[in-house]
Image (tube, rainbow, N blue to C red; front, side):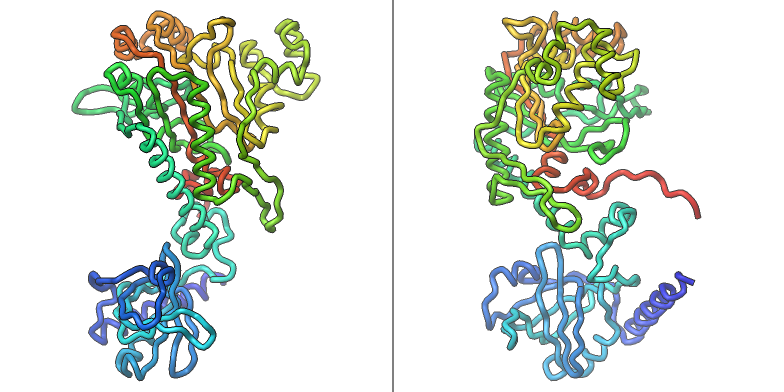
Length: 486
């Protein structure tokens, strides 16, 4: 019963398709030369300009002998006025076979309507592509999240808010590149298929290369290859690309995600923290026009405001833990587990003691921290690729930047001692030497300068700056579970 009206609409569009062909018009036309997009023409509007543009029909107002339509694309919309007197009766007859959703090209002259709307008076139009399916209702857009994520093209057509988020994402990435390049960093590319997945503790995706006869892994991080480039003599490098982790999906996790990693020879984690703080504030001010980032609920009510104003707070990891349980480090591992049980924080018997402490940190600090916080000097077990602190051997010289209740960026004073690095990686791999990247360790033996390194989760940064609550809202095509049922 519900499909019947939809089938009728599809049949009507098919009938119009055949009517266009019968009139000798190609419903899926050829290339069309334009002088600007709808948004560009509107942004630089001046009366009396002769021009050509193209776009999708997204609105239609029939005034009898004349018609007003909106032509739209990602740059914006432009109103077009069509009248039989200007375009001719024959072309107006063709217009009767068009629908909202169709693409057309328009040649005409700009003018302003009596209501003050910038418009184009069409002298002729060209059919570029017939839409065979009706678009979602203009006023309600795509509300179904299944459709929103599986058919992103419909979401972008129907929901201006979604288009704005992705336009901001594009600008954010462009500004990050510009920021780093202006400071002497150069962009490089490293392998996305690796013989040994390294640079993070995560489950990789595995594949097989037939010609070489070897198993390969989609990278979980580019870190070990970027450090090889420090060995090779590059002083300031960055890579902005995809990582892949064969793990869970949630509102903060997607199997493939975008990361920035940057390395600076002869710097340390404190210098990298300053760089990240300056970068994020620059991007926020440039893209959002403010350092006060509002997050709103579905009704448009502000639920929190993230204050990015500098300077950002820096606090030692152990001090944050002691702020929750003052005598935490005086307790035995058994007493720590007992505290977790009493306070309804789930820990398992297989978790090591440092992992129990980290679980407390995640639940009681990370998830509750909205404004920027650099958490410094984390336990060395958490970060096997970072340099050990010169004063306290149990911690490493790192920061974790927390904003919006999640880690946005880690930064290290990079470990460049090949012997200690081997020990750390062997411990991380549980003694399985086949999991060690021997070429990376060999590279370190040739000498890597002291360096600072950072990672920034671009998807999470965009979430924070655009005020959305799910990573799926900032990834154009997020991974979804297969559809079930008929």
